[in-house]
Image 1 (cartoon, rainbow, N blue to C red):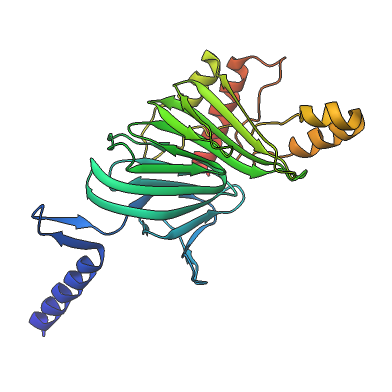
Image 2: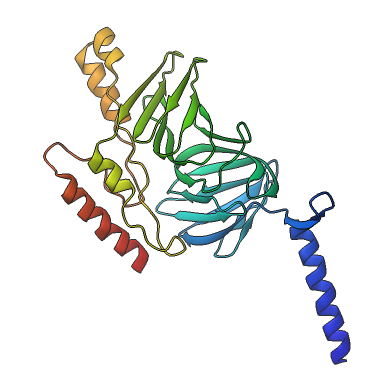
Length: 292
């Protein structure tokens, strides 16, 4: 009887392993079929296959697969260690589509991910071949290699679609909605907006030393701590100011500035608040989140 149980257990484990791994005869090694494993989760997070209605609740240790669509609800966070050693963090009210993934080794992989809405942070610790990894944030697509980026994608109450990208390390070629491209360097913060009438604009500003320090702060154990995500950008629509008068401009600005960060991170700093106070608030909020 004991022998039968052992045999059954071995067969079950083998069948389970076959679902998660496959043998690559060219490389003569076993490679994972899944794209990553959840190492940190807080709140209500779920996934579903593209084209399917069944949703799976994500918990610590859950594996994510190609063609998964992952969603976080309000005040929820997710952190994934991908099989190529990339760290991925999703913030509250976010949705990401893992549209393509093919893994051969940590330095030889093809990956397409799409932040449909919300906030994300990705640290590609292993360099990739040019063109092998593409990250889309809203309407902005990027080819990345060894890079650490943050991104936000959201639609304002006024109907303007906003795509933000901030680069902390590496280099990124951003493909903009109007067909042009821009190379982003560390410290660059790119904001692209598309209005309801189809008009688009892009501007790239350099982050201050204090802002970069904030986003690089708290270099703790990545399996236990969430790092800061990019603040939502508050838009003031200059075109509305020029064409429709101050009343409409104030309405547009108020609606577009209404995208608060439900994850508990401090919002954009006011001019009266020093970066030290913002960093202190950030640290306090992180400790509150981690102690829940």
